[in-house]
Length: 466
Length: 101
Image (cartoon, rainbow over the protein chains, first blue to last red):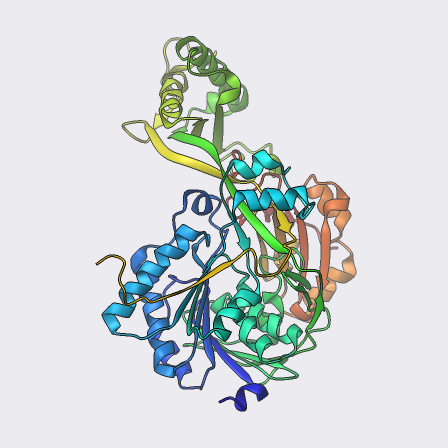
């Protein structure tokens, strides 16, 4: 294999997100194609800041265990390395340990032998403040303000690692690399780069492969098989009815990227301006011309801070008299609620310490200020009242105090007592727990590419739980 | 004719928590060229449609993908209090009715 790998690297992307449900039949099939490694992304910011802030994963444990078991057993069967990145959705240390615990269970249950390297990506606050003071934390656009107190006030900050820590772990003999927050493309580019394949192709191949079958014409349950040689990438899916076409592959670089051509990584930018896509057969596409521009090393930061605790009320309004004046009615309801809060909770709160938001479904809850259709009035409106405060207890009381005004605040069209709001639940108030917000859109310029990430080799057979 | 009648897919999505991106995709080169040649899609019209400074609008014509792309800063950071679309997936609707002469 040593000579062959210099001519071509072949790899498997079994699914776009660990826990999404791997097609085991397709994985078995592609494992017969002499792949050199399997890599899989386990994270995303797509679901919002909660996972990073709270330290919890977005997928059920059982779903991650099923996928990880298929990958680890497949990797052992083919005797090839496995790389998992952005473990546990947000890639913080606690997320990595959550996946590590699952891996430990799989290794014990299947009697696997794995040399496991774990790479942590969570960032020390004192270290980040040193970088900040050395002008080594730079804003992206748009970026919220940064300061020592923003760093100190974060629930958790991760750095998005590039290929280098993965490569070092592989050089040190790992055949299972479990990484915290990591560039998705780096998971796939690491090994081809180590073997000297052109960086433009290695990074583009990673980018194309990391979302699994999203690179196909239509989404379906399948596995992506990619090869890189000195002058081209080929990519094809395994799975019923799936195909890659030049257009589907070209279009994939649009998805979830602000710029379809330039993609920033730690060590530089890959440039797809000159990439050319060509069908080899009905399901396989050849890509040439992707380029890479080396740049000073930088590491993207992701942070989440506690925004407060939240309680909500869900219900609806059908009365056309209220719907036609909903804005002013809700504004009066809010005034009434704020007065009662000031009266009852004066010791606990002032107006600047809490937030009351009405989401008016049917009017503009989805698009807010971007809603172009401001004249339309529906026959009913769904309302979610969101009360956010520094403690759950206070948020709960704010929502409780909102119920009566929502129910009974009058309109001039009706004489006498009305019940204006159709509550969905009893109890009316739902406590949502802590809520977080993303508080960083910055890059760090470390002094060396490795200092932000910590690698440990771990014996998974020595079960922590037993 | 409106854009929704010509495009095979118009979509919006987060590109990270701070950016919204919009893709307008076509089934064939003729449809793509028709829209491109009409000049109906450009940063100025997009800025007006999305109430955003024109210098913040990024616009790409991607002929090999038969697609146009716009990107703007999110009006709210993803998940911030007041944000009503966590994934940004339902923000493309104003593009549907852009007239293509």
